[in-house]
Image (cartoon, rainbow, N blue to C red; front, side, top):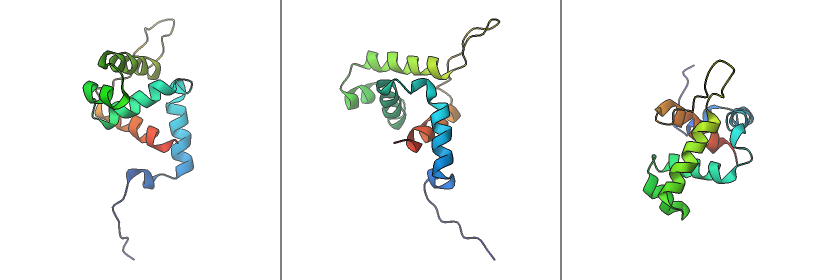
Length: 107
């Protein structure tokens, strides 16, 4: 038998329950911050454009920058006794892709 691959969305490759569980874990630091999640989702969907995100959300571009910086801080590695906190690298395409996938996996 030959398997036939039919192109479809990446989200179809992972069972929805598993994708949602991963998304909840990854995005847990933003669970109580719907404005941050909304801003991150818009910013990622608009390819990191501060101006287009601001226009889409009806907020100032500096507010977008502040919210995205807060997302990076919350989603990064927390400080320990021996090391400083490290924000998530939102310039990294892999990080952006994983966050986008997670955001798409949740309602």
